[in-house]
Image (tube, rainbow, N blue to C red; front, side, top):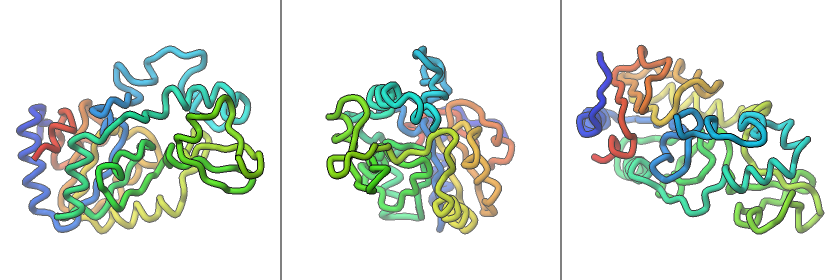
Length: 244
């Protein structure tokens, strides 16, 4: 079936699916937070189309963190953290669906913490969070505000060890326990809604194969490689689509 491009029509179609569901899972990416002022990666205005001293993919790698820590933390503070960002309609609607309806969990590739800020309780942060920053020597945990107040490479107040954001960088593996929990949730769901992600980053993109439920919906501004497997495709602003 052709993709729906009108946000209102998409919202009505999604609402009908949600009302039929008894166990829904949402899998989201960077596009969920663009309406909150946080740029995504691959759109025309995304990070990968902006110009930096190094390619963003390189600056977001483990080897760059190790070999160029000063530049890494400059990029982290300027581009990976959005302290003034607030949840948008998509975040709030998902929190509402968890509290009152069928939503079992939010699985997110985002590291901004906006789902929790909106009120979601069961959130699997598959790529970690900027709100946890961990000393690599003693394990002390610091909030993102602490990192923003520091200059250069932050070091632990307790032991002097290097502090690293608890985010999954390129060349690093995802938490296998979280990944297995995501597989379990998706395999038990009757409705899987995928939103704001291009579905090209693995292994998260591969989670779709574990869905055996009634309806698969993809909400993304641009087509994805997995649209042909979906029962409903909505190419519209996700914050508007979740306004129902």
